[in-house]
Image 1 (cartoon, rainbow, N blue to C red):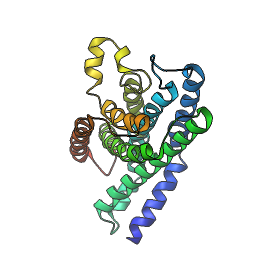
Image 2: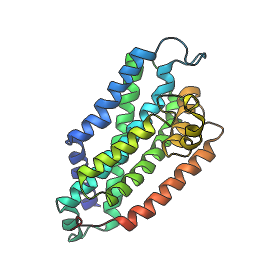
Image 3: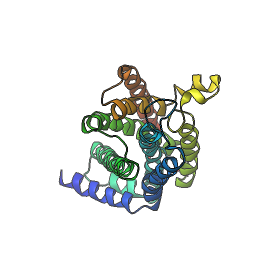
Image 4: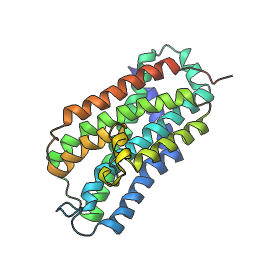
Length: 251
Protein backbone atom coordinates (compact mmCIF):
# COMPACT_ATOMS: atom_id res chain seq x y z
CA UNK A 1 0.00 0.00 0.00
CA UNK A 2 2.88 2.37 0.76
CA UNK A 3 4.33 1.91 -2.75
CA UNK A 4 0.87 2.52 -4.19
CA UNK A 5 0.45 5.80 -2.29
CA UNK A 6 3.94 7.03 -3.17
CA UNK A 7 3.45 6.29 -6.87
CA UNK A 8 -0.03 7.83 -6.86
CA UNK A 9 1.30 11.03 -5.30
CA UNK A 10 4.18 11.21 -7.78
CA UNK A 11 1.84 10.58 -10.71
CA UNK A 12 -0.53 13.28 -9.50
CA UNK A 13 2.30 15.82 -9.29
CA UNK A 14 3.45 14.91 -12.80
CA UNK A 15 -0.03 15.61 -14.15
CA UNK A 16 -0.44 18.88 -12.26
CA UNK A 17 2.96 20.17 -13.42
CA UNK A 18 2.14 19.36 -17.04
CA UNK A 19 1.24 22.48 -19.02
CA UNK A 20 -0.97 20.43 -21.35
CA UNK A 21 -3.09 19.41 -18.35
CA UNK A 22 -3.30 22.95 -16.99
CA UNK A 23 -4.40 24.39 -20.33
CA UNK A 24 -6.69 21.77 -21.87
CA UNK A 25 -8.30 20.64 -18.62
CA UNK A 26 -8.54 23.82 -16.59
CA UNK A 27 -7.96 27.05 -18.51
CA UNK A 28 -9.62 25.98 -21.79
CA UNK A 29 -12.94 24.74 -20.33
CA UNK A 30 -13.30 27.84 -18.12
CA UNK A 31 -12.45 30.13 -21.04
CA UNK A 32 -15.00 28.37 -23.24
CA UNK A 33 -17.59 28.60 -20.48
CA UNK A 34 -16.98 32.35 -20.20
CA UNK A 35 -17.16 32.73 -23.97
CA UNK A 36 -20.46 30.86 -24.22
CA UNK A 37 -21.86 32.73 -21.24
CA UNK A 38 -21.02 36.15 -22.64
CA UNK A 39 -22.25 35.45 -26.17
CA UNK A 40 -25.25 33.14 -25.74
CA UNK A 41 -26.54 33.53 -22.18
CA UNK A 42 -29.44 35.86 -22.96
CA UNK A 43 -32.84 34.73 -21.67
CA UNK A 44 -34.35 31.32 -22.25
CA UNK A 45 -32.60 28.77 -24.42
CA UNK A 46 -34.47 27.24 -27.33
CA UNK A 47 -37.66 29.06 -26.39
CA UNK A 48 -37.75 27.49 -22.91
CA UNK A 49 -37.04 28.60 -19.36
CA UNK A 50 -33.57 27.04 -19.19
CA UNK A 51 -30.68 29.45 -19.69
CA UNK A 52 -27.95 28.56 -22.15
CA UNK A 53 -25.33 28.49 -19.40
CA UNK A 54 -27.37 25.91 -17.47
CA UNK A 55 -27.80 23.84 -20.62
CA UNK A 56 -24.17 24.03 -21.78
CA UNK A 57 -22.54 23.46 -18.35
CA UNK A 58 -22.93 19.64 -18.57
CA UNK A 59 -21.43 19.79 -22.08
CA UNK A 60 -18.41 21.71 -20.81
CA UNK A 61 -17.93 19.13 -18.05
CA UNK A 62 -18.06 16.34 -20.62
CA UNK A 63 -15.64 17.90 -23.09
CA UNK A 64 -13.26 18.56 -20.19
CA UNK A 65 -13.36 14.85 -19.25
CA UNK A 66 -13.14 13.92 -22.94
CA UNK A 67 -10.06 16.11 -23.38
CA UNK A 68 -8.42 14.59 -20.33
CA UNK A 69 -9.03 11.04 -21.50
CA UNK A 70 -8.17 11.39 -25.18
CA UNK A 71 -5.36 13.94 -24.95
CA UNK A 72 -3.85 14.18 -21.47
CA UNK A 73 -4.16 10.59 -20.30
CA UNK A 74 -3.02 9.08 -23.60
CA UNK A 75 -0.04 11.40 -24.05
CA UNK A 76 1.01 10.98 -20.41
CA UNK A 77 1.13 7.19 -20.77
CA UNK A 78 3.23 7.53 -23.93
CA UNK A 79 5.56 10.02 -22.23
CA UNK A 80 6.17 7.56 -19.39
CA UNK A 81 6.78 4.83 -21.96
CA UNK A 82 9.22 6.97 -23.97
CA UNK A 83 11.11 8.03 -20.83
CA UNK A 84 11.50 4.44 -19.67
CA UNK A 85 9.31 4.88 -16.58
CA UNK A 86 7.14 1.87 -17.37
CA UNK A 87 10.16 -0.35 -17.98
CA UNK A 88 11.71 0.69 -14.67
CA UNK A 89 8.44 0.08 -12.85
CA UNK A 90 8.46 -3.47 -14.20
CA UNK A 91 11.66 -4.08 -12.25
CA UNK A 92 10.06 -2.99 -8.95
CA UNK A 93 7.90 -5.12 -6.63
CA UNK A 94 4.85 -3.00 -7.52
CA UNK A 95 2.15 -5.23 -9.09
CA UNK A 96 0.66 -4.26 -12.44
CA UNK A 97 -2.77 -3.98 -10.84
CA UNK A 98 -1.51 -1.26 -8.50
CA UNK A 99 -0.04 0.63 -11.45
CA UNK A 100 -3.35 0.59 -13.30
CA UNK A 101 -5.29 1.45 -10.15
CA UNK A 102 -2.98 4.35 -9.34
CA UNK A 103 -3.19 5.72 -12.87
CA UNK A 104 -6.99 5.49 -12.88
CA UNK A 105 -7.31 7.01 -9.39
CA UNK A 106 -5.20 10.03 -10.35
CA UNK A 107 -7.11 10.54 -13.59
CA UNK A 108 -10.51 10.34 -11.90
CA UNK A 109 -9.52 12.58 -8.98
CA UNK A 110 -8.11 15.31 -11.20
CA UNK A 111 -11.14 15.38 -13.50
CA UNK A 112 -13.58 15.46 -10.57
CA UNK A 113 -11.69 18.38 -9.01
CA UNK A 114 -11.62 20.17 -12.37
CA UNK A 115 -15.35 19.56 -12.74
CA UNK A 116 -16.03 21.19 -9.38
CA UNK A 117 -13.93 24.20 -10.41
CA UNK A 118 -15.86 24.53 -13.68
CA UNK A 119 -19.19 24.27 -11.86
CA UNK A 120 -18.03 26.85 -9.32
CA UNK A 121 -17.03 29.22 -12.13
CA UNK A 122 -20.45 28.79 -13.80
CA UNK A 123 -22.25 29.55 -10.53
CA UNK A 124 -20.09 32.51 -9.51
CA UNK A 125 -19.73 34.16 -12.93
CA UNK A 126 -23.12 33.47 -14.50
CA UNK A 127 -25.42 32.39 -11.68
CA UNK A 128 -25.83 28.86 -13.01
CA UNK A 129 -28.60 26.99 -11.23
CA UNK A 130 -26.92 23.96 -9.65
CA UNK A 131 -28.58 22.24 -6.70
CA UNK A 132 -26.82 20.03 -4.16
CA UNK A 133 -29.01 16.95 -4.93
CA UNK A 134 -28.45 17.45 -8.66
CA UNK A 135 -24.70 17.73 -8.16
CA UNK A 136 -24.60 14.57 -6.05
CA UNK A 137 -26.42 12.68 -8.79
CA UNK A 138 -24.23 14.15 -11.54
CA UNK A 139 -20.87 13.30 -9.95
CA UNK A 140 -21.21 9.49 -10.40
CA UNK A 141 -22.19 10.11 -14.02
CA UNK A 142 -19.10 12.28 -14.50
CA UNK A 143 -17.08 9.46 -12.94
CA UNK A 144 -18.53 6.98 -15.43
CA UNK A 145 -17.63 9.33 -18.27
CA UNK A 146 -14.05 9.75 -17.05
CA UNK A 147 -13.51 5.99 -16.93
CA UNK A 148 -14.92 5.64 -20.45
CA UNK A 149 -12.76 8.40 -21.89
CA UNK A 150 -9.58 7.25 -20.13
CA UNK A 151 -10.11 3.75 -21.55
CA UNK A 152 -10.50 5.24 -25.03
CA UNK A 153 -7.40 7.36 -24.43
CA UNK A 154 -5.38 4.24 -23.69
CA UNK A 155 -6.40 2.86 -27.08
CA UNK A 156 -4.98 6.06 -28.60
CA UNK A 157 -1.76 5.64 -26.59
CA UNK A 158 -1.45 2.05 -27.78
CA UNK A 159 -1.83 3.01 -31.44
CA UNK A 160 0.16 6.27 -31.49
CA UNK A 161 3.92 5.96 -31.99
CA UNK A 162 4.80 9.07 -29.93
CA UNK A 163 3.26 11.39 -27.36
CA UNK A 164 3.02 14.11 -29.98
CA UNK A 165 1.08 11.83 -32.29
CA UNK A 166 -1.25 10.90 -29.43
CA UNK A 167 -1.99 14.58 -28.78
CA UNK A 168 -2.83 15.18 -32.45
CA UNK A 169 -5.03 12.08 -32.70
CA UNK A 170 -6.74 12.93 -29.42
CA UNK A 171 -7.43 16.49 -30.53
CA UNK A 172 -8.99 15.34 -33.79
CA UNK A 173 -11.34 12.99 -31.96
CA UNK A 174 -12.01 15.54 -29.24
CA UNK A 175 -12.95 18.45 -31.48
CA UNK A 176 -15.00 16.17 -33.71
CA UNK A 177 -17.16 15.04 -30.80
CA UNK A 178 -17.18 18.44 -29.11
CA UNK A 179 -19.25 20.00 -31.89
CA UNK A 180 -21.47 17.04 -32.84
CA UNK A 181 -22.66 15.25 -29.71
CA UNK A 182 -24.98 17.66 -27.85
CA UNK A 183 -22.17 19.24 -25.83
CA UNK A 184 -22.30 22.88 -26.93
CA UNK A 185 -24.98 22.76 -29.65
CA UNK A 186 -28.20 20.71 -29.55
CA UNK A 187 -27.86 17.57 -31.60
CA UNK A 188 -31.19 18.45 -33.22
CA UNK A 189 -29.49 21.35 -35.01
CA UNK A 190 -27.27 18.94 -36.96
CA UNK A 191 -28.10 17.45 -40.38
CA UNK A 192 -30.27 14.32 -40.15
CA UNK A 193 -27.50 11.96 -41.23
CA UNK A 194 -25.10 13.37 -38.61
CA UNK A 195 -27.71 13.13 -35.87
CA UNK A 196 -28.02 9.41 -36.55
CA UNK A 197 -24.25 9.00 -36.14
CA UNK A 198 -23.77 11.40 -33.21
CA UNK A 199 -26.04 9.52 -30.81
CA UNK A 200 -23.70 6.51 -30.95
CA UNK A 201 -20.48 8.43 -30.28
CA UNK A 202 -19.11 7.98 -26.73
CA UNK A 203 -19.55 11.56 -25.52
CA UNK A 204 -23.28 11.62 -26.36
CA UNK A 205 -24.48 9.06 -23.76
CA UNK A 206 -22.24 10.67 -21.13
CA UNK A 207 -23.70 14.15 -21.59
CA UNK A 208 -27.19 12.63 -21.58
CA UNK A 209 -26.34 11.09 -18.20
CA UNK A 210 -25.04 14.35 -16.69
CA UNK A 211 -27.47 16.96 -18.07
CA UNK A 212 -30.74 15.76 -16.41
CA UNK A 213 -29.33 15.81 -12.83
CA UNK A 214 -27.84 19.27 -13.25
CA UNK A 215 -30.92 20.70 -14.99
CA UNK A 216 -33.74 18.88 -13.19
CA UNK A 217 -32.14 17.45 -10.06
CA UNK A 218 -33.06 13.91 -11.12
CA UNK A 219 -31.72 11.15 -13.33
CA UNK A 220 -33.09 10.93 -16.84
CA UNK A 221 -35.57 8.25 -17.81
CA UNK A 222 -33.09 6.73 -20.27
CA UNK A 223 -30.23 6.48 -17.75
CA UNK A 224 -29.93 2.68 -18.09
CA UNK A 225 -29.70 2.90 -21.88
CA UNK A 226 -26.96 5.52 -21.83
CA UNK A 227 -25.06 3.81 -19.02
CA UNK A 228 -25.14 0.64 -21.09
CA UNK A 229 -23.63 2.38 -24.13
CA UNK A 230 -20.92 4.01 -21.99
CA UNK A 231 -20.15 0.68 -20.31
CA UNK A 232 -19.90 -1.03 -23.70
CA UNK A 233 -17.42 1.58 -24.92
CA UNK A 234 -15.43 1.18 -21.71
CA UNK A 235 -15.31 -2.61 -21.90
CA UNK A 236 -14.32 -2.75 -25.57
CA UNK A 237 -11.72 0.00 -25.18
CA UNK A 238 -10.23 -1.70 -22.09
CA UNK A 239 -9.81 -4.99 -23.96
CA UNK A 240 -8.26 -3.29 -27.00
CA UNK A 241 -6.00 -1.11 -24.83
CA UNK A 242 -4.78 -4.17 -22.92
CA UNK A 243 -3.85 -5.92 -26.17
CA UNK A 244 -2.03 -2.82 -27.46
CA UNK A 245 -0.25 -2.04 -24.20
CA UNK A 246 3.55 -2.21 -24.22
CA UNK A 247 6.28 -1.14 -21.81
CA UNK A 248 8.75 0.20 -24.36
CA UNK A 249 8.36 2.50 -27.38
CA UNK A 250 8.09 0.97 -30.83
CA UNK A 251 11.49 0.33 -32.32
